[in-house]
Length: 220
Image (cartoon, rainbow, N blue to C red; front, side, top):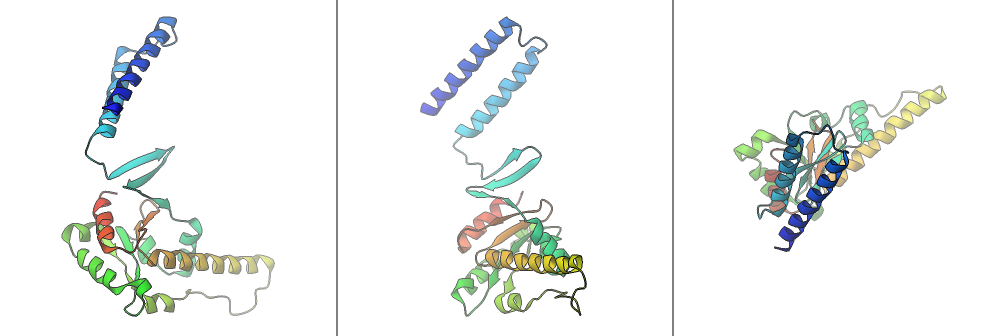
C-alpha cells in the first residue's frame, strides 16, 4: 500500500510538471500520443515492480551492453585475456566456441573441494530434456584439468628479439589467466554464454541452487 501511494504521488508530480512545461511552450512539437505512450510505459514498469510475481530473469541495459540477472546473480563479461589465452593455446575451445550455453565445473571423488556428489546430482539433472537442449555440460575431472597444458608452451629456442620475447611472455601470461579463471569457476560452477561473451558463477557449490540457476537461465 505504501509503495502504491508513492507511485500515485510520483504520477501526480509528473502530470503537474508536464502541464507546466506544456503551458510554457517547452513541449511544443510533442503529440498527445507521445505522452500516452510514455505513460503506458511507466505503468508497465510500475506494474512489474509492484507485482507479487518475481521476474527471475531480467535484462539491464547500459548503452549497447546487456547483462542477464537471475535473482542476485549478474552476468559478467568473459575477460579478453582469457579468450585470447584459449585462442592462442588451442585449449578449452569447447567452452568458449560452443553454440549452446556451457556448464563448467571441476569434480573429484577424493577432494571434498570438488565434491563428486555435486557432480552426480548436476550431471543427472542435465539429462533433463529442456536442460539438455539449452546447455552443454563440460564438467572436468580434477586430474584431467591439472594435466591439460598449453598447446604451445614456448619456442624451441631462446627468442631473438624484444618483440618475439614479448609475444611469448604475453601468450604465457594469458594462458595462466585462463587456467586460474577456470580453476576458480571449477570450485563452484560457471554458466557460460559464448554468444554474449558472458558468464555467471555459482556462489556456493550447492546442487539445489545450481539446478535453480540453470532452470532460470534457460532463456538467457
